[in-house]
Length: 333
Ligand SMILES: *Cc1c(COP(=O)(O)O)cnc(C)c1O
Image (cartoon, rainbow, N blue to C red):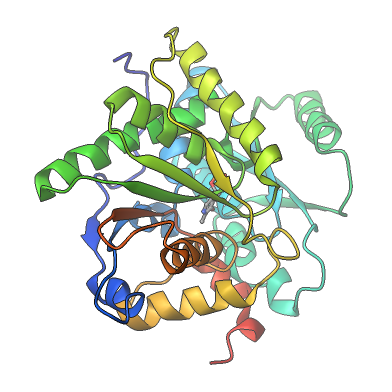
């Protein structure tokens, strides 16, 4: 495999563990799937999460290009922004975060706590934009302005989801495949949240490379299956193009959009139940924006029989628990 330069940020391998009490809670008659969790909430750096792996590639590239400032975009409670701010600090770079006030009707905590608070502690400069702006224009303007000030900005797209960032999840799948082998299990399904798409795309590329023969089921947190699918399949092709390789046997692209609810960052009853169930059965925190909705998707698939009682399913925990502090009014139980 073509090894690219990376910097070290994450504590790897992340843990891989079985969740027997969650399985039991989802199978009242004792007939339920075996549920495992890949703990990328435990990547260790800056509170953990999936962007840490992507940033190992992206920041290496920024340093190689001689950048002195990382610039990225996201929502006010972006986990990616928080992890980028910390990666900049760790590498002696400045960080400019272009955050959009895109999630309507949130409480005061959304604008003062959670990731927003941590961005400031990591020393990032935050610029806040109203919803509905042209993201490309905002990014281009910020980069041009920094250049005019004789800075050397390196722009990282939303979620770190370009081919280079997504490559990190191809690697992560190979890490999971080794852990599954050591546990002596054969994985039938991987369930993962699909946001900007890089995590899902990297995992798909990894499953294809490893010939793992499992299904990869994305749960969209924002877009329709069609829109998210176009983004993910484009990124899978970009990963292979970046590596100058031909795509082999393709694994089906599956994205469930039934958990989006009113929209990105908007709570749903199923998300709230999923967050509380995982916390109360396994002592594990998932998050209100991504993993809560993805777990709600997993639960719905178990209940409908789409994930069968003899199946082994891996839930990819991509982090995000700092976001819980931005939604205190939602958890009243
Ligand atoms: C960004 C993020 C995701 C989505 O990953 P993408 O690669 O953007 O699809 C999932 N979970 C958490 C906690 C995230 O911060």
